[in-house]
Amino acid sequence: MYLRSALAVLTVSALLPTLRAGVDSNDESESAHLAAANFLAPAATTTTVAIPRPARDLRVEVDSRWIAAWKASVAFHGAGTAFDAYSSYNRGPYESNVLLRDANGQFGNKAVLLKVVSFAALSAAQWVVVRKWPQATKAFIPLNAALGGMYFYLGHRNQQFLAAQ
Image (cartoon, rainbow, N blue to C red; front, side, top):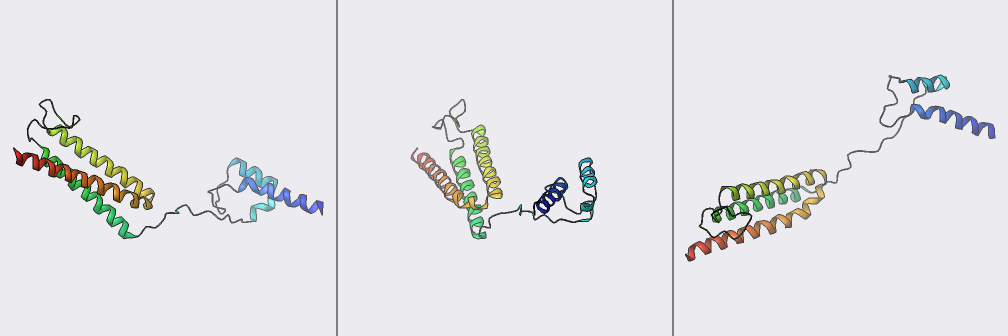
């Protein structure tokens, strides 16, 4: 009984060096340590052992309507950003945001570039996250809607401010 167990352990231990993760069992190439293992257990060279591999692509499927809603929310955010930039561009020395104000106190080309780059960076980051984790679309939709709504409100306020002058 003990002899059979010892023989089984010895056979399995002789096979283990040949079973590398990620290598097909029918791979014909032999490296130095595989040749040594085959020399120690010559009967193991004719035995084929199948190793079940876990599925690497375990992506969560999200309904295409969520993806479409996320794309629409990104478009809404972009439209709000563009409207805010349009309503602020060269409206006089009234830009209240210090980061977007130029030396004359106006919303100029530098501010437009900053708004475009910030929108593009946020959208690109969301795109990368959504490709990796599609279920994140459900979190980004309200974020984009809130940002787009805020920028449309600020653009509307800029228009009201210009009309009052």
